[in-house]
Image (tube, rainbow, N blue to C red; front, side, top):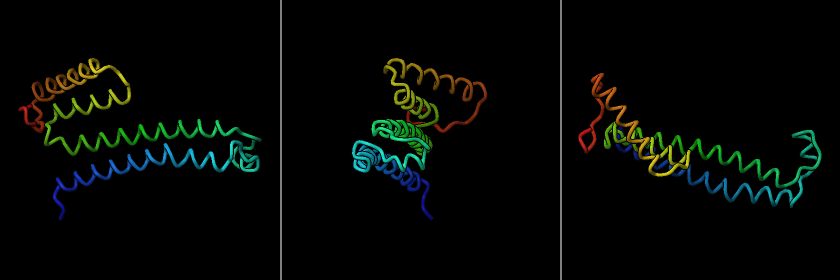
Length: 147
């Protein structure tokens, strides 16, 4: 049977692979296919079958694909960061791990300044420690810093 550590590392490698493949497909393959298939204009027959409308400019297809690709990429990044958080919780500890998890997500999703990101992450990690570890005495995994 595979050890838990090897399984977690394998899951992390799979998520990195999924993100890389998605990035290549989203950035290079699909826009090229859209451009070559329509040659700058759409096929009215296909549009009539799919959407029931006439000529649709290529730019509309590319804009729609860009919106879809961004949304799917955000979902994959959030899932990847969550898997990494779960895989590293015993190594980093709950408090440090949750602070890093929140910092990565706030920075990636919100594109906020590092000062705000670190303040929110430290505040949330401190609040987690205060409520769960100090007041409620919930046993959290302890990291290398002792919390």
